[in-house]
Length: 337
Ligand code: SF4
Image (tube, rainbow, N blue to C red; front, top):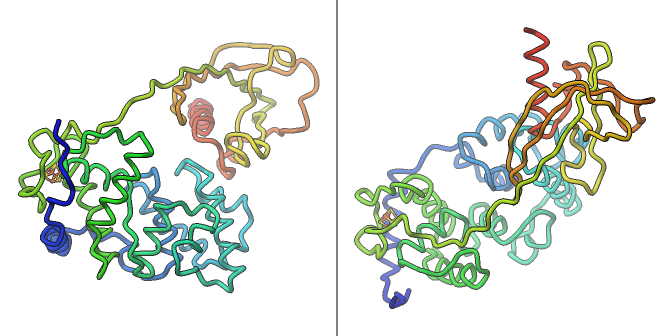
């Protein structure tokens, strides 16, 4: 296959078309009505790995709970995690909390250079480019899944986007495409195009502002090319141990997956006796496809002091890891008939 060269693309014309399209087609999203770097950083961190429709109510509630960097920096970790509950990837909540403390360590001001942004906790190249361009007008091109899809289709790029070399190449192309006079609008426009027109399946090429120049539009779904790694299957058994109206739960210690969140304990035959199977829940996490079996059990001796018995109402007030929260809801439904 002959590789298309980005140099043959007329970037200035495409920039103008993209900007004109965005002016008329952009969605009215709450973070587009603000220039507050805190709110912009919050939205960008929430939007990593999470859909816009899911993020909107969390974003609005969060700003009521923690309206400023200082209110977030002063919040207890438990309250921060609880406010994030349900969004998944809790590391983002901890990073945001650490970011608020770091910003308060700079008198509440975010830095305005790419290097300094990258030095802050939880800020990677994408987030630095998004915050830098949208909040401060820095000429930094964003490269997320939406942008990669648009660019690989536009250029019919056959390179595997799972490879770091391809990411670097796409970053160079995104930099070349960037409208440096208004990087905020340009970045938001290309992400919007990927999110609403250049969809993973059935892209709407007929209404796309870039269709005249697009080299991949007749086989758009072939792009981006990404080598797949099969999910590793994993099985786990968790124990539901009741004591009157309460259930034994434990908080995950630091350094482990779901640290700080609550969960039901793993079934341990040396310390527990199984009574009956209860439910099977399947979920995916990173590269794992997990089948979680819940069994009703009891302790052989005294329960360990690392956890405690919680009523279902108390559980609702705590931040539970998503699959365990599903189990708690299941118990609640059964209890209430
Ligand atoms: Fe995507 Fe189609 Fe637009 Fe090309 S023409 S960028 S494939 S929506």
